[in-house]
Length: 128
Image 1 (cartoon, rainbow, N blue to C red):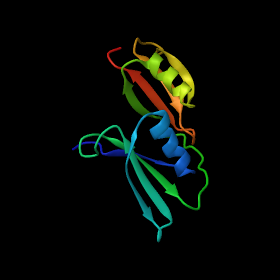
Image 2 (image 1 turned 180 degrees about the vertical axis):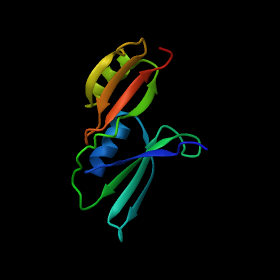
Image 3 (image 1 turned 120 degrees about the vertical axis):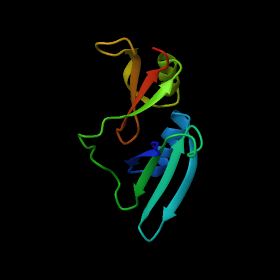
């Protein structure tokens, strides 16, 4: 068994795709419209779905926004340098909500950014 994807419901698919591809540097792997169901699925990631876990962005055409649930935590991405990643994300127009630095009660270097819908993305510095 392996993890295939994490699904997030998004209010504005184009805005979310711009964030995940333009700010976080992912690739749009596939996109499928379901007119009868009035929704679109878009899968983004850093490599092929056959090899890597990806994020499924679900856009229900009649729902412009969602309230974030209290049970969802975050999606985590490994980065070589969390400090440099934060600087690059800011330069691309992204929002860093917790600057890079050691985690509380530990030494792992982490940071957090938010996507346009308010979902948290944790950056974990490789080898820290």
